[in-house]
Amino acid sequence: MSRFGKGTRSGYPPPFSVLHAPRLILVGVKLSRPMSLFLVAFGVWSWVIWPTFLKNIWKDPRSFSDGPTAFFTVHLVLVIASLVFGTVIGVLGVRGFLATRRR
Image 1: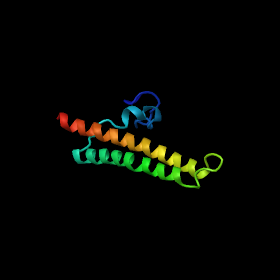
Image 2: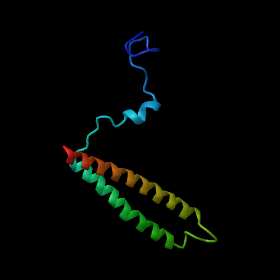
Image 3: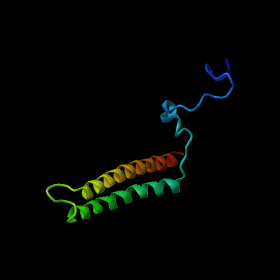
């Protein structure tokens, strides 16, 4: 048996498993303070821009005719995805910034 456990006769580590990704993907990652602030600014920017965009799409005559149109639905999905990504990125920035303050 190799030092990596069962199933690795060649001596190389086993291939990366998707099941291990959540625990291993951010181990040892450190954000600098400027990068953390950039990520926070990106998150805030997303929450300023995308709701305004949605208001403008809502007022557009192509958005509704006997209910929401495909034009509106596509843009609504775009806004929701962008707000989710902006929130996640902003939270990572806040966590990175707080980690730099603790040192």
